[in-house]
Length: 512
Ligand code: ATP
Image (cartoon, rainbow, N blue to C red; front, side, top):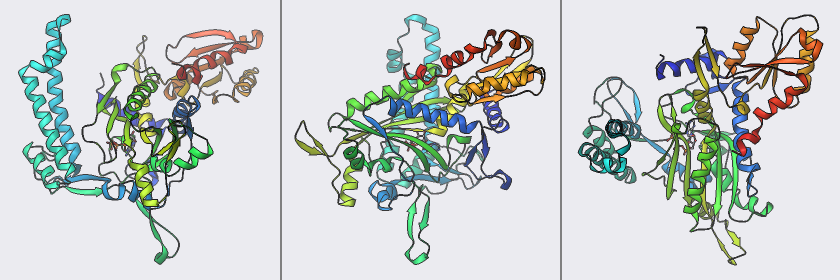
């Protein structure tokens, strides 16, 4: 059986081979952590974005969408704290010359201890069966308790070091934990340095009057600076949300794992403005609502978990991630943050403009609190792809690679295949496509055997293949072949649209 590592490698090759994702500027050997989406990738990505947009904007009367520019006034990033605090602590191993994020080295070390705890718990669950009380076991088993104490102590030391920006303490923690470089296996570490993740560029043609701009590292600030514009022109009443999707840029130190960590990526963010004091209620509400959105895709529940933050960003009073089990383990997919009034207050003080809401019920003005949901579109793409990609052994001993994509996300919805290239079958096939193409992306394919054509559609995740044969000309019926089950059924050509619609409609997931 293929290991997760093999599967992940195969998935990456599949993405390239079938036109989903290419390395950026590949003819020049690519650009690290930057990728281009191909003909099918861009469709899938668009469909995921649309799923998010419909779920957030179309399904909520009190959420509206905007599309702010990537360039923003440079003071924005002073106010947001990114100029001073958007840093990652980095450390180099002198032997391997490899660079790491110090926080990631420590988190990986903690994950190893967590794995030991989970092993004990699984063993005990198997031993005690139904009588197993997990909470009691976790709080009393000496080995589990001791390991949990270790984790808590590391987290404490890490948090204190980061809060004080004490990079020497962070380095010392790495030394004390005897963390070795995964490549060289040594503990020959440099100092830890803070590294700002924003990309900068110049605006203006003459260098003297050029000013330094940043490529936005998150889309959220475009929402904050437009808070009053939208509230006033849209006559929005609190609580309300502003949603946006768009590119963000981060000069990530360690970019790896394909499109999981990119230097140019896309975010889908929503800022929900609430009355101060109600933020915790909304924070819990959005945590659940967002998990439900992910779960509506139909992937197993065990693929998701919450991770509550202990180290909070400079703006947050509560934060959690929705983690997904990628082929390389559970990692952050989405963040839900209670951002308090930090951003709006800070923009008020840097701009000198009031960013307040007049509450007609209270008859007073206040700066709203904000709960944010922020998910990476590319990470979502990777989650969907890694769940959908399946190498299957069939009953007859042959193999197929199929993308079991949720049908509404599939790039191509219907492939229409004339059995032979003559006898009017191609024309009949085109006729069907001409009816369907207004609603769905369809594909016409007449090359090779039907079996080969099915495989090609399986590989890009097309939910329906419709075969036009001689009988079609006689009685207006076609064979529809379903991707996942490979079951074929004969239906009237006039029923094809209805069948497709019943499976690919966004309605199925939005009401889930
Ligand atoms: P991480 O800890 O993985 O660096 P983060 O906590 O900095 O992520 P946020 O600032 O909360 O991430 O960004 C919100 C979302 O944007 C993340 O949950 C993720 O899906 C996405 N995202 C962030 N950085 C990247 C990146 N470099 N490449 C792709 N997606 C990203």
